[in-house]
Image 1 (tube, rainbow, N blue to C red):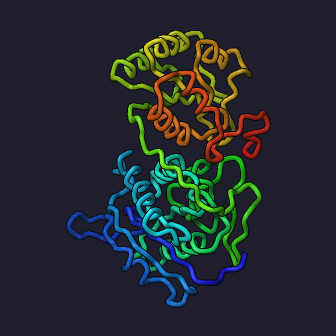
Image 2 (image 1 turned 120 degrees about the horizontal axis):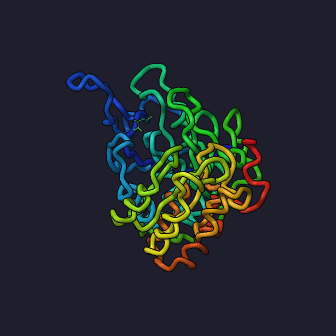
Image 3 (image 1 turned 90 degrees about the vertical axis):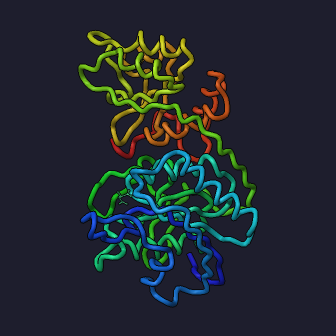
Length: 349
Ligand code: ASP
């Protein structure tokens, strides 16, 4: 893909390792470097790119809350309205919870027709061997020139759809992978983009920012007491994503969960079953122990990642509390996050 012509992009910072500096008082790294500081470490001549900057906040992403996702989407909304010439966005963010924030922005800010490229690094940009400058450079290339019209994560030379990415490595430079289907593209000498991506289009922005934050994410484990689910509903949660075993399976003998899932649904709490496997999908019709959840009315996340399913449930509950409407939203492919076909999930098998 040709990279040339003048471009105007917006870079936002939210913190994370990429912008961290060593604080000798606490004896650890903490976010704090400005966008200007980060840009000063990049090659001077990167083509005719004009950069507009927005310092949103400086947080380790472990401290990012759903209202911070809204803040990012809201900044995109404001800039989109004020400055229609922006070709793309870069969002600097910590890697720990980047997939949650990026997935949330995908759902909240649709139809932008241009890239929103989240990036960060495993080593602070203030350290000489950091992966930060390369990731920032790549994200700038994507925002400025890539024929991409969706929210993505640009990291270690790969472009991942936000709702399909997972942080799979805590330390290595290739922190993220795409979980079914394959990445959207690669960055080398050129930007190589695959057919599965959404292309740039003329913008038809649709902002739906409302979230219901009362959603719980639960991983089933052998020996888990069913009363855990009852307690979650008692605490006032309106939705639970349950990561079942394998294809979304739950215990049906000792510590059986079917009964408490049924009760949760009767009390108005939506239950969405996903898989705790990093690759693959929830297929509740495969085994008796999967049907147990389906039979009492739980929804299947199919091949959505648990992170995307969790954010999507918050976003769906933010729009309606009618269970059939929630089911319809959950099972509609909105930004490329779900494929409800039996072949989905094959990449990791
Ligand atoms: N704890 C950091 C964060 O998520 C890790 C990173 O950015 O890589 O903000």
